[in-house]
Amino acid sequence: MKEQLAEAFNNLIDKLKGWFNTIIEYLPNFVLAILVLITAYFIAKYVNKATKKIVDKKVQDESVSGMISRITAVIVVLAGLFLALGIMNLNQALTSLLAGAGVAGLAIGLALQGTLSNTISGIILSFRKKIQIGNWVETNGFSGEVMDINMKDFTLKEADNNIVVIPNKKILENPLKNYSLTTKMRVFIECGVGYESDLEKVESLTKEVIAKTFDQVEKPEDVEFYYTEFGNSSINYLCRFWIDAESMLEKLRAKTKAIIEIKKAYDKEGINIPFPIRTLKFDNELAFNNPVEFEKISKN
Image (cartoon, one colour):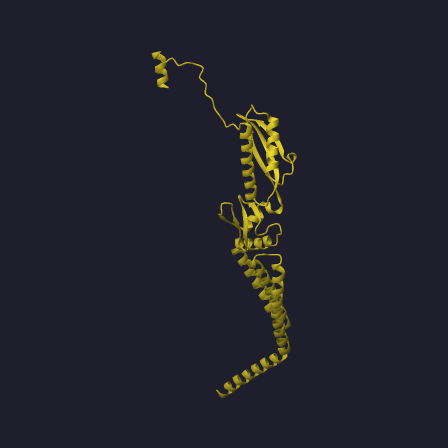
């Protein structure tokens, strides 16, 4: 019994000596690895702040800039961790860590495919100079002012003050019309005048009214005027002109003002704007005095 205890004690001493020798052998590498991790941590903090300052100049959304800066910091820390593991000759652990990270990343990516798609789309939209907060845009069947671009969705405020939230993925996959990229918008007015009207007078009067109403239209010749068709009750025309505007609300206000002034001018000059009229004419007289005919009509 004593011999077994002595043998076990000797084995323990040998193990401890082996561990101690290993620690002494790898102590410089361990210290160097710790220094690498500490250095990577401080570099990550600096990179985080520097990246945030750079991104803030191009992206207005705080959440997007914060996420990008944090991702950059995490990459720096992971690089330091891998370097430290390599210094300590833990190549097998490093390989296992990379494999595990790859499998976990694939599983998370499949589980959060929609969320990650919207997140990446939000980052892309935040860097697009042609889409900024405050722009008036039209996309996915909605039109309004861009109120927010974050990591999940794209927020619009329509002209009726309703808020529309659209997933970022939908914005990238569908066409988007940005009215704020240009300082001019074209107003279209379609109307009709009676067949008895002097068409040349209608054209010149309409152009003069538009030129007097809007400062952006310097002269009547700048107004485009085209007769388009012989309608059922009127001769129809299309009038269009340019105004200084960056939103659909300004365009609608200008169109409303133009319609009011054109109507006033037409009323003053006696120009008729007809509305559809249907005339029913009966050429035959119904013979109600004939009992046979009256009976047929009653049955029908």
